[in-house]
Each structure stands twice: as C-alpha cells, then as structure tokens.
Image 1 (cartoon, rainbow, N blue to C red):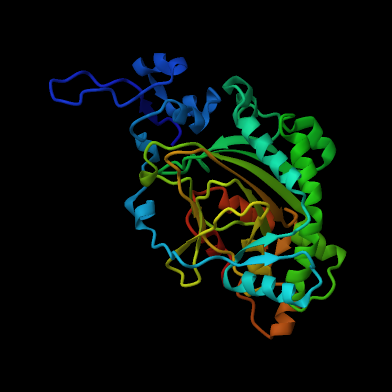
Image 2: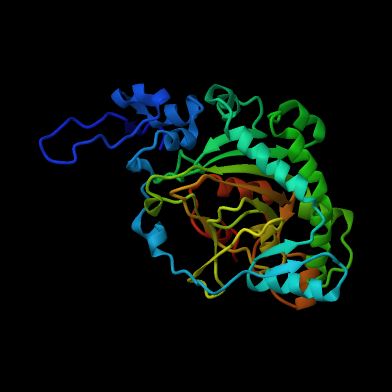
Length: 384
C-alpha cells in the first residue's frame, strides 16, 4: 500500500441533484479539500494516522480501506446466543477453577476472567493513558512512528502491515516490546509509560497463575526455569485505537487472525466489537465488555507446545460507525531465541506423535509480520 494515493478534492459541481462534496472537513483540515496527498504521508509522516481521517468526518470510505466482500461484517454468521466462558479466578487453587480454565482453553481458546486481582483503578488508568496518547498532537505522535522512533521496541503504526496489505484496517496502534523497566523509562512515551508498567507489574500474578493452571491441564505439575523462559520469556503490549468510521460495513478494525503469543491478556473498553470464531468453525461470537474483566486468549505458541490440545482461535474486530474504541492487549510470548514445538512432557503423557515441527520463535513471528492478516495461516507454517 506504500505509495498509494487518496484524493481529498471536492468533486466538481454538476447539474445533477445532490452535488454536495463527499467530505465534511474539520476546520483545521479544510485546506486539504483542494489537495491530493499520498496516503502514507498523511497517515504516517504527518503523524495523523487513521484518527486523522476520522476527524475529517468523511462521508465515504477511502478506497484503500475497502475490504473484499468475503471479509465484510455483513458476511459474518453471528451466533447470537453463544458466549465465551466467564470464569471467577478469585481462588486459582480451586480444582473447579482449574477445570473451567483448561476446558475453556481446549474448546474456545478464549475466555474472560473476573476477580483476577488487578485493581480496577489500574485498569482505568491504562485506558485513560491510551486515550491520552492518541489525543496527542500529530507532530508529537510522529516521533514514535517506526520511521522516526529511536528503537524498534517502540513503534506507532496504522492498520497492520500497510506495505503488504491489499486492503487496510481501520486502526492505529502503539506497540511496545518490553525489555526492562530502565529501557521503558528511557524510550516509552511518558504520557502512558508509568500506567503501563504498573499494569504489567500487577498482571504478573495473573500470568504466573494462568501458566501454572494451563500446564497442570497438560499434566505438567512444576514449571522449571527453562519452561518459564520458553512460555513467558518476552512481553509486548499494544495500545489500539479504532476511530469512528464513516462506513464500518465496508471495512474492518482488525482482520481475521490468531495471535502468535503463548497467551494474550486483553483489556477492552465498554464499546465492544471483538468477535471470536465459534467452536463450529463457521460462526462468530461477540465478546461483550464486562467492567473489570480481562479477556484471555490462547496463542499459536501454546497451541503448538500443547500439541493442539489448547486452541489458538481466529478473532477479528469490526469498525464502529458512531464511537471511538480502544483495547490494550498484553502479549505473553516465548523468548525470541527459544525453539518452540510440542513439549516433550505432553508427547510422553499423551503418547501422540508431534503435530507441529520445531521452529525458532523469532522466525515464527517474522513470518507472521511479513504478511497481511490471513486467519490461522501462520500456524500452517509449522504443521507436520
């Protein structure tokens, strides 16, 4: 998509009725009504992102965001009555909790947890900080786009991978790879840094407890140091901003994909729009926002390591025509230098042949980030 153009020119007046311009521009952007500007320049180099397009109050969707018919929301078969599991984890040691979590990881790959111990105030602080980040002036946000960022660990971007996408996604996001608190203090935007680090620290109990439970479900009773590094040796946190969209029925907030993580902890606001693939493999189920809840989804890495027992499920986000939406996924990942494959303990316990080949985790993620969202296409990369 790099180098594509988008016209902001008001159409010439014609004698036919309804000859008004397709665009109702915000005053600060009115000058652009008489310009044709490279889309990459507008979105990235200027720092405006998709948020800038949304603020122009366009009546029509730029053609670069038009999704194929097959990917539009109207073609989603919605399972209205279904819901992913909602699990009270106030007692992680309860055998009923263990069973509920492991069953959900096997059947759904997605579930919500409540009474998880992360204070509501911490969650609200993160959401406020996310809104504050995207409210920054374009010239300030521009400093964090990957072309200007001082580190590839701090990357503000738009869509997913614009360079390889045939149709763009209606989303801006900041992606932060966590190395240490010291690096975060030096490089992360100060407007959200402290809130994110506090949140990540508070989530440590959830991460450790969830890993212990899920591995017990694989009959691995103790996690040694090697497996801790393998399962949760790196972390990335994204701040997603989905602006109001002029024609949400023609595009997507995020296309169909599964995460490459061990698992993901998602904090979402009260707008909604996240859909996950139902167990029937055809329908979609909405994930309704629950105040104080965290959404957990199994990632490809854990599906591979569990030899397919736990499921990494396709999910997507639809665009919203009336409100902005935010979400904050925390990706708990293997260490990039680790080889991932079915755990030996799992193969011995189940007496199964491996369904996936071993692969360097950094190679697996590199393959994911070299292409547009394509459902579970990345997992096919390692299937035997």
